Image (cartoon, rainbow, N blue to C red):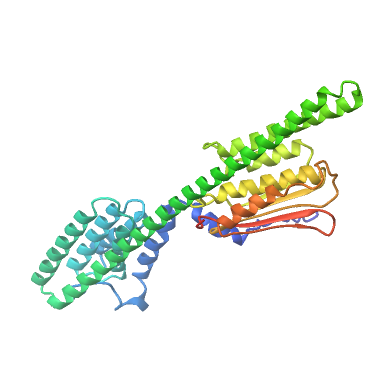
Length: 389
């Protein structure tokens, strides 16, 4: 009987995607490791004597009440950003039980962690929370003194100052984060205003140029009735100009639509280009960050303009689109292999690429459009997410 051998293919994990996968997890799952780490650290012999505690009561061995205090101090850290008030209340309760019971645990470090998170993430009743915590600490100090604490007034005061400083650091982080969010909102608003102003100028240019050309060509057609060949050519030019005008107007009106989801329509844009006869290979890494701001719109515009140029000047050639969403920037690369045919009019205005360069420069990014040795072209852009205009 022959021996059968089975081969299994191990899954390949792209390590570059690990940070993105981690950020997509629920915030509770991302905060849970800290809680588990403190629980484990509380049982490590090497950390004995380095506990966060106040009162200096005689230590007691670990027992069931100590386990309850340990759970109260550590496990609520998993919700320190989702429910900071609940986390702070439970951690404080666990710390009080541990200190009154004489359980000196490394998990006492959870109290400064909870204070820091509450200062950074607590949105309402911040002053009331600070007052209640101060009163609770005074009550704890009095209770410890009655139980025979040798800490002394200076020790209690020093520990209290440390807690206050921790809370203030969290509050500073919160104010800094709020200021940054407001700055990004203002930058995004200013960028949208500038973009709409520029589009209004382009809209004026499109209407003026195309409609004027159509009027001139239509007027000339009046005098060509005796020359059917020239009349047919002129009327064809009028039709072509009208179609280009409609295409350009739709292009601009899509951008002016406030409900236009630029990031979500990249796949639609690529599919539409494929239906027009352009073989496009599209790869996308990651996803748009919540703070990407106007970077998503600029990303869409870069891909859109590059694919339009591919249809005009390299129709039928193999086109590659690669979009990578990073934590702080979006990189775009669109290239053709130069095997297609030219369908657009020679000597384009270059306004499209110039407009893209302006958009990317407004976000402090980098933009380039170059010819390739095989006759194709490549467009590259690095677009910072949420960068100032």
